[in-house]
Image (cartoon, rainbow, N blue to C red; front, side, top):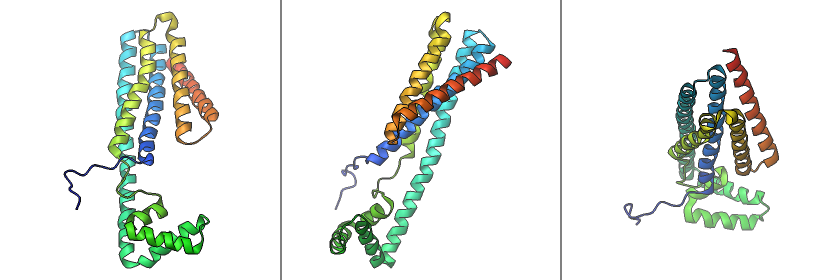
Length: 231
């Protein structure tokens, strides 16, 4: 019998780590764009550096906590769904064990394994851990490894705050002659990085993701610049 006090928690799966990284990348991107949007609008409307700094800082904090709460709610719902699926499969194992075995056999048959070998694999796996086997083949879930809403929330919050710091520091610390070009450069480099990371995490096209992110960043800065002019 496993001693609950001394048993170690199994290492996080790749899916769990990817989910935490995804939340961080999205949080960083939102932090960059929302903070620079506010900074551009306020900096065009006023030259008071303290006002600009406070506006940017307030938006950075609001964005960080907003991203964290959104990720927590979203991943909590996902975790609840995963637990519901496991509970359903546990009941099916009691009421329709043969049907569950057939689902495992069908999974391996679809991968090109012969009927005889598929049945042998299914029998062996079900004997070892029936519940873990069926949730893996039917839902691609690892038993007892649920997405962590807290990890996603903290990752998103920290990344949003860190991302927002780049435009905030550039706009408030650079000399007047370099404030605007320096901030534009900081934002462009930052969204290039988040575009690259998002493509890598999602197995997408890096070039497309980077170009898309940079265009969104430039459009965001342009819109807020003209909003500030209109104030």
